[in-house]
Image 1: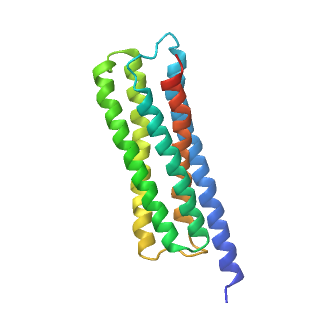
Image 2 (image 1 turned 90 degrees about the vertical axis):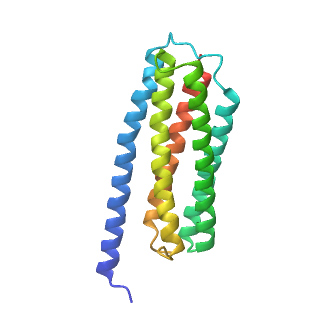
Image 3 (image 1 turned 120 degrees about the horizontal axis):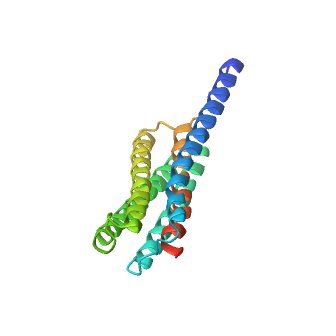
Length: 187
């Protein structure tokens, strides 16, 4: 039998956790906003023709697909379906790693065609580096959550860490949705 006080305390704690996460995401949004605004502030900076459009589109597709698998992992946790949680978290991590490899290739090309000494190179490398750091952070958190999930840590009523990690991952994906057109499409 659940005690009403314990249930109220758990709901209150969950509410505080969610509020804290949204405030954190909001503060991180300002950081990305500043990085992206530098591209628009320096509007005279032309997008180099050497920018690998196909690679940019490919890694965008991979990252957006990872958002779907992250969502499916969270839904599996909500329903207490441990195999679905583990399978979808592993897929999200795998797709995230493919994205990181794509960014590494991007950087290799960027240093050759538009080095950090150029205005576009500075904007490109700073913005993708900032985002890459957040992707790596998200991958570390998702890997930890996967480890906990494999050990049976999450149940139908106890899955806040999964929810928090997935919401952070969605934030990282949404940030890229703004970064991609800013760096790859705007002339």
